[in-house]
Each structure stands twice: as C-alpha cells, then as structure tokens.
Length: 505
Figure 1 (tube, rainbow, N blue to C red):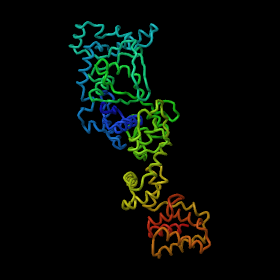
Figure 2 (tube, rainbow, N blue to C red; figure 1 turned 180 degrees about the vertical axis):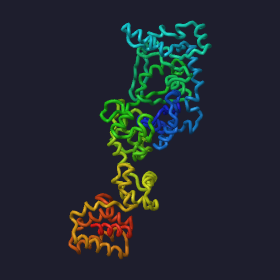
Figure 3 (tube, rainbow, N blue to C red; figure 1 turned 90 degrees about the vertical axis):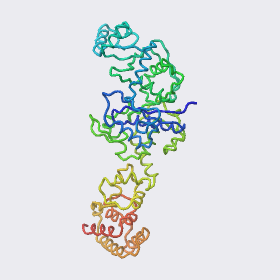
Figure 4 (cartoon, helix red, strand yellow; figure 1 turned 60 degrees about the horizontal axis):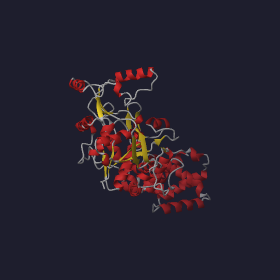
C-alpha cells in the first residue's frame, strides 16, 4: 500500500478559475480522507505565458478557501523544488534517457519548415500534417540524419527540441477512477515535444517525471487532458515506471449555465457573475471580481464547488469542509459536465450566512462594514446586529444595506408614509416620544408594550403606526423587528429619528 499523495499543479498564467479550484478541492478532500498529502506544484515552464504575481495569487486563493497544501514552494517539503522552473536539469536527464533507449529523438525543424511541409501536403490533397509516424521521416531530425550530422548540429548550437517517438497501432489501456476502463489508440497521437528549444520541458514530460519523483499516488486533472493520456502512459512505460504509475481521474468540465461548452472568464464578464475565486487584473478584460470580493463566504464557495459534479448520494447539499472530508469519494464524481448556476451559488451563500452565528460571521462582515467608513460600536454589539439581519443577507455585501442604519442616520423615504399621514398620527408619535424619553427601562418588551398601549388609547391599530416607526428608524420598509432596532440604536438616537421625521412630516 502506497501512501496517498496527490497534487494540484496549476500554471501561474492568470486568475484561478472555478475548475482549477474544484480540482484543488477534490485533491484536498481525497488526501485528507485517506490521511495522505496534498501537494501544490507550480508548473511554470512556459515562460512566455508566465505572469508575475500569479503564483502568490494561487496560494492566496487556496488559503482563503481553507484548503492549503501540505507541501508547496511556500510550505516546503522533502520532494522539492516545487516550481518546475527550478527543476530544469532534472527533465533533461530523462529526455536524454528516452533518446538513448530509442523512444525519443532530436528534431531540428523550424516552425517555418514545418509549416512549409504542411502547405505542401495540403496542396497534394493530404490531411494537415501531424508530426508523427507518417511524417517524421520527411522532417529534419535524428531519425533522418546520421549520428554525425546530428552531433554536428548540436555542437554548432542549432536549436532543437526532443520529441517522443510514438508508434502506431498500440492500444493504450488504463483505469480511470471517474470514467472506468479507458482504451485509446496511438494512431491519432503525434510525436509530442518533450523538451523545448529553451531547455524547458513541456507538460507531457514534466508531469510524468515530477509525479514519479514526488511519489504521487493519484493524479486528478481536467478531462481536457484525456487525449494526452496515451503519451503519458507510454512515457511511464518507456522510463520503466509503469508499475508505479499514479491512478488517474479525469474530472468533468464546469459548463456554461446553458450547458453549451466550458465556462470561461469571458462568460462571467458577459453574464455578470464571477468565475475566479478572488479578483484578478486581466490584461485584456481589466479587473475581474472574484467570489470573495462579491461577498461569498469561503465555506459556501467550497460547498458549492464540491457539489458541481459530485454528491454523496443522500440528497444532502450543505456540507462543512470537515463533513466533506468525511464523506468524499472520487467514485461518486460524475463523468459528465456540470452546469454552473449562479443563483444556486448564491443560495449556498445565503444558507451558510443563516447557518453561522454572529461571532462566526464577524470576521467576514466586519471588513465589509469598515470599508464603508461606518462608525462602528464594539464587536459584541455588531455580533448582535449581524444575528438580527443575517436572514435577509444573500451576500456579505448585503450587510451594508441591511445594517448601516444601526450605525448612522438613514435617508428617510417619507413618501412611503406621507400619503396616509394625518394629525392623529402626528399626535401619536409626539406622545410616544414623550413617554419613551421618560421611560425607566429600555428593553424590547417594554417598548413594544408601551407602543401598543398608546395605540389602543388613541384608537389606532398598531399596524397603522408600526410601519411609520420602521420608516423613521430604518429609512424604508425593511429590516428586523422594529423594537429590536430601537433597542440597538438606543433611546437618544431613536427619539432623534422620530422627531426629525415629525418635523418634516
């Protein structure tokens, strides 16, 4: 029995997409369920697409989501380095080993030469060139050149890549934890580049070498990598590692809301919802807001992501991270794509806001309120207010609109009550203000009792004056219990708001 070791291996090229975080989450859940290790490896070998700050952004996203790795460029570990750019010489060793065993070759063709041959074959009515078994002998490589010619080009500094030599007619078989037994033919697989002209490996070589050297037991990745699986299986075989090849699972795509294609960052911009965990400055699209900035709790975000393509079979939808660890299994991940539903995502957030108490919500709500520049009371009072209004909050940002009147005088929409206003109501509120100003206590029940008692004395239905009181204190027709509001803002502020509204009415 091998120790369970899984890895999340993103490229630092931009914002962390929903699909990427879900892959990280499934890795985390699986590792923690099995008592194993969750590794973060940064695949930064494509230096043309490298974006400064993207690696730290990835780490920050995982930390915010509550799924930090056990090993990473930051956390360290005994299998480092954890950046592929720092492992450059490791890959060359194995690329050269593949050449020596006859399973790879040097290729000196320039992109222009490859395109010229492609055009020639196209003119002859043949299919587009795929650099592989049916065309490699037409190209400039160590298979068509003599050993002497090959070494001469290398010693002269001619640029070259190293390609894997894939023979046709081989049936590749492996078991996918999500999809079951897989059979694929090498007939449609080209001779993938393993080592680029700059000495950096491609994904195909690096993922196999790194997974082996880091003793990765299970490899979970998106289904878009399924067509590359034959090359990776062959590399494990050619390098002599076939018996310790990781178990694979190719995860389903997260689809657009209509189910038509993979969800992209442009879909989020177009349809008005986030597709990144946290905000990201995109060079083409500008600042893209993330789930965090739009007011999602990490608990709700993770819960929602887990259910995009997985369930435990019980029909239950709300899970804490610990509960997910307890019940998660890769066998219950579906093989077909999962449609993203932003309204459902908000439902998860609303449920989690309702589920958590004021003390738990305070660290998330407090920064939102502070950003508004509100004059805030002590944390205990804020927790009480959070508990009063949380049922009405779908996003954390909703706490501003639903609670700001506790901390500052609202803009009162007098038109909501002026249409049915009369002298009798004016007299009621003047009398109420006088009574409350000399009231011994200031608690919910006494405020409600005295209010209803006065309404009875003046032959008014409580509902006739309850709405005006709410509007005076809150500014509109919303908010928690009106006497709870009065209790929290205090006697002086309650009477001030009533009297200001009366002077206008």
